[in-house]
Length: 457
Image 1: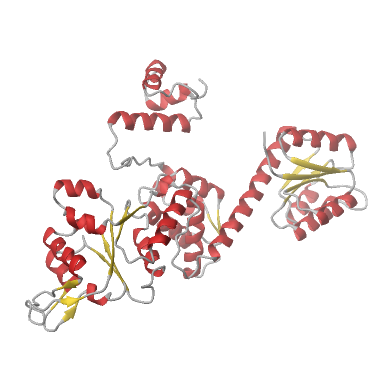
Image 2: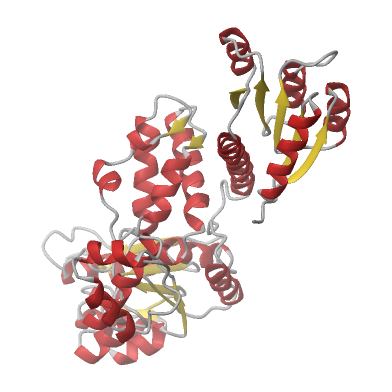
């Protein structure tokens, strides 16, 4: 067993010390031990330990002194007290001064193993939380993509390369993945950064309203047009226009947009004089664009014009490592906005979020954290602050793979694999969850090539 945690053991009883040392080394910890409280203080001055396991009653320097000094030097470390003089008052004193746990002699080795493991895990979590907060400091007040996922970092590399180049970009991805944020990232890293950035959802307007919003109109062009109005394409002069859900644009509007791209000019609604425009277009969609082209709902020539560079943003479920980082990013954002002292997210909450499939992607995670901050009365978001359906359900979302809808067999294989993972590879339990007998499960495992390395019965 591998464990990178460093443990300091202090006990003035040699037999007890050697016994604990042996057990902890067997668990894989890096162990340092001493019979003296005085020597323990010297060791603490020289290096940091993740967990300190100390006897309470010792001559000259006792466990409480060890505890106090460890807390002063290393606030993230945890101290576990062990004593043969189990009294309520000594337990209260130890916990009052910040001890992680209190174990009375004679102790059970399984109990010690469990407590040390929990303490070590808590230390690792605190350090990870601090690291995440430090990372997030660099994101404040900037248009940055919060990620530590390798695939998204590669996508950011591509975005940084194309940002200074005046070329059209098509961003694809599920709703809530952050397509507009990527568009803003391209803008602020381009030569147009000092000019306007405008965004419009092409599926949110009727054809007439969309034409007015994009191209503007002349006075008297239609009933109610009492004055001339510039459209977003004109208003974004020198800057960037983000066309969200571009595949929802009516075909007649697609023709007009194609003219803007090709000729760098437009006609206002009701106008006769072409107007020269200088704008960079970044388009986005959550649909399969090639399918839209095949169906005739999206013009192929416009697709080719917009699709000079494509950025495909993966769903949040495909980059689980980003969930804790994003959670703390949103925590800091909403704690600041709401002026609340919420700085932590309970380990159980992070675990639940990591096991959730997020059909709503980053937008859904942001809503969950915002709710958690709003409901929290302390310094942490707890399970009680999450939506009830999230606590009760573990939603598994099946998505298109490489632009294709999975077949029934592919769905079944994916589901069986997921159930096996959730049951720790226990085939008997997996069969019960699936509602089939073991023979049927065995046949399906063989059919899908899953019979090897799938755990025990």
